[in-house]
Length: 117
Length: 113
Image (cartoon, rainbow over all chains, first blue to last red):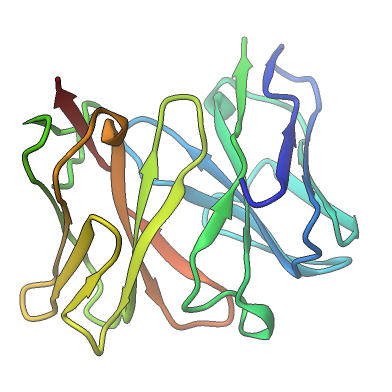
């Protein structure tokens, strides 16, 4: 898992509550990503970070926010969880350095399964 | 191959046989391609990659073939083993300000002992 730890591994929460998922990496990589994985869809990018306090939106960012106050931690927050956010969330890093990971594979954590009831 | 349905296409292969998993990619400007393996309950794991200036690349028991003319990618696994049972999906990269990666839905490989 390339030194990536996601927590919690499983979470059940109620609609309307805020939820924060954590991604921790031990290899000091600059680029970190949050994806969601749903049946019938490929992995879809939620947000990504290119450094401490530097983040940007992906293709499915509505309803999500992120923070990166330290190189090793990238947090994903669901501001007010909805049932459509029931999914498996994966954190990833790339090792491509300053080119944003272009032309290098992503390394993923083992995911957080989130259920919103 | 790829599917837009909720059920993944499944490939069943006898242990010891070779497996071929196909992927059709969408963007003719994509110039870097990756195959991932995902076991149940785990995150995707990098298998092999290929750049668009190549049409074949070999790894340990795996080979990736790229046909840019028809936008097709394939993963060949030699002497398939039970541990190869997983979902395999391709990803295509296009250059951009961040890593613009499009992931396929995947194919489930079942190895029959």
